[in-house]
Length: 180
Image (cartoon, rainbow, N blue to C red; front, side, top):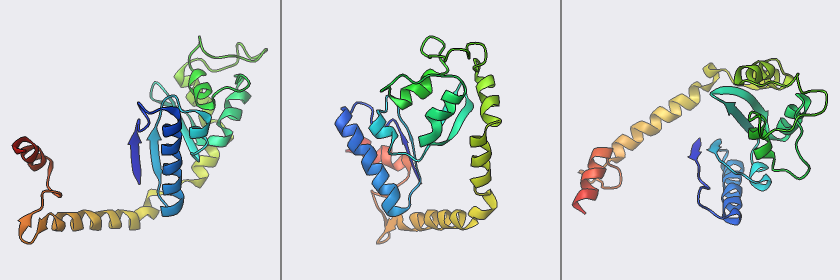
């Protein structure tokens, strides 16, 4: 499992898309789960991901397939402008000055993070995600594998009886960098 926090920050759009494509290839070829937070992700980047999580003030307002997120918010009464960036649309629905509401839905759309969360929790997307999630008990093999990897790493910190400079703890990394 890999976690990436703003990996495309500061990159031009072509390089950012290339990076997202590399993450997709890593996930497909090596069976990895990759979690990434990205702002200003164009449609090319957005389309590299299977699932999307949309938060509003810490409330989960959507978690599900990336290819159904736009339609989900449209069924709530929001309008995604033609040719718009889907990721921007998803984040704009919670900002009253940025969102577009379909005629007749002006008083029906969620307005607060809690209203969005309640709408999501009552949705078929939420039910589907709950039905398909793996119970934590079934992940025992992954936990055992992770613990074994941690133990291997601890043993590998010593090479030929000496601590390797490449496998040291944080304190020693700081000391080594300071000395250099």
